[in-house]
Length: 187
Image (tube, rainbow, N blue to C red; front, side):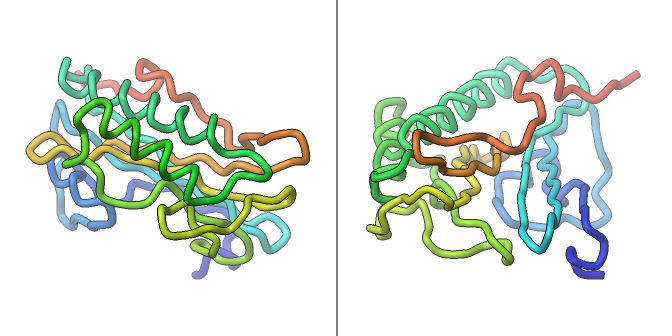
């Protein structure tokens, strides 16, 4: 089934544990283990338009290292959300995120652009990327999804769908970013 056939898709992306370091990898036959970080994804087709939401989930209490990087990715997404508004260029949003990476010495943890437009397709232009000079306009929708990818630890990524309005932006996907809400029980 395509997404438009079923309306809603939710699942983990196959990004499990240290292999979540690879942003778009799909792991097969992985066994979840206590301490694993999971890359999870949800999407919906509403009237022919796509939205997306991504979160990390933790199999049991996160380690201090996982907590540190997760908090940094929350701050990274906030940086992008604060930069995104009507009248700025897509490249300016990505430039603000790049400054965050540099300030925190995280350049090696950067693996993809800050986000992309959403419409009837999952990945559309314009792109929140240093090379895209498109001016952000009211009516546009973006996935805002900067990430941190730490070899040997995993991939930390938040993705929310954002609608651009005349006076700012509105996050239209609602799921907690609070780390305590993202811990899966483990006996």
